[in-house]
Image (tube, rainbow, N blue to C red; front, side):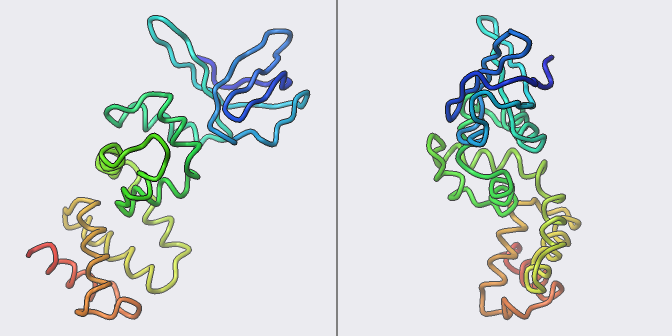
Length: 201
């Protein structure tokens, strides 16, 4: 396993780097635009993942650990996504925006990435929601407005009651937008009650 590569940039393209490490050149596939700041001749440390197949060994590189973890989640957990498509996804949407789309079950945002169709976007949400869900909701709640915090708390309450992430998010969104509660001023308790009515219809 090659965890990282440190050396001088011999050549840089938007999605490909050649890094000279002691006279050995490593070809590293990277997300589009992730290393635009790395001019030829500069020193660079790239986090990597070596993907091995019967007919090839390919080295993929990442700007940070969060990017690499998301790559591995996509490749290992989402049916039909291989390394090339995973790199396209990483280059098409910032990591934070990708996670927010999964947490909020926003398949439309994911489908806007070139090469990701509607069905693939929906599959990503379905198969990653439990991996990215609760932790991301907590992180968002920490920096949210009072109205956003209430929505996050309502989602967490529904998760604790055993509802699925995607269903909880949709129900709270519908509740906050309905006439039953004031979406801006409603507290978490009111949102939970309204969301439960949505779920029990």
